[in-house]
Length: 447
Image: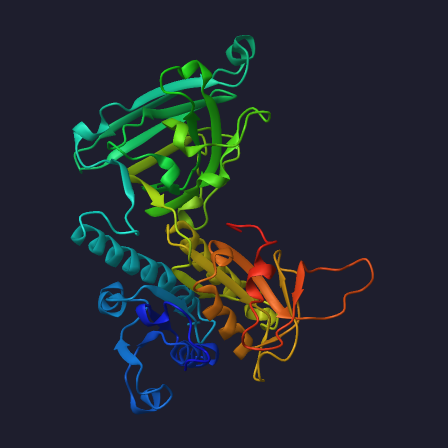
């Protein structure tokens, strides 16, 4: 064990979901060989399941589709590796395992981390900074609703269809920002000057997370940054976000904000003093499903639960094994990918540090024998061994370059001249080779 041991592994408990899958079984053994404490989530602790895993693994029974069964599974866990996948192409199974299962596990881990943070009086490294919580009428104080247009008055008057918005606390106990914009080039804003606890600044955090509900519209989050003593020197930065019908969490990294004026410097979170949520009719898309019929995309409803700042992290909390779609039967590929991508999106929105691995078709052969290609853009088509995918999962746990990244991976292949597809080839000559860091350092985050 000393030959393979990883510093800090003995203080890290990893929950492996899908521990009896082709990749999961190898992940479990690699983790144990390196000194981790391992918990395995299984639906039933039947003899044939128990026999597939080392005896020192703690088995916990639960169903990723049943949130109540996951509370015990995440107890004491620091990280999750999710290798589970639906065993059929039935839409209900795909949604339960590949989409809702990922969401349920992220929520369970977050709830557990929040509980730890409360027990430690908010001093946990996992603690989020509460910026606003909308639980009463008084919590709406300080928020202002404004209207505006992008065009000159003469143009606005020609296409003025009217606009209105309000922010109110309803009888059902919800804070609702709603209204409509029929004016061409018009928009409505919900804005507030931030008031952080004494000693706290946003440069200690990596982004914002919004817990919201509503009718699935997209919005622009605008941050105003500059010297608080002289707001005339402030700069504006924006990032576009999408919501879905019903409730969701939306993660907005500070790195995603762009200056309204291209010549302005990048956002410095330390200087942020005002937050604005803007609705504008342009770029709105109908939402899928029955609720997407006969939609007027010029009206909106946004139910606000809370806004928090995400603590800066160095490592991944949740590793998700997804897929590229290559190798899947054409008749079921679209259904599988839709569920997989929905699961990926729910992980990105969760606020947890994540690594999403999309391997090519899985192959049953030894790992570490062939060079790997890391890429982004759904362009690879070659296979990869289950053992190599498992090795990437384990290496991603403590590699800061893997945090908040999604990537495709497969075996090296020779591309046609002028059609080279991949970013980097990394050889795996032995177990000590740290191939992941250089491979991922050239890839983009939050993709």
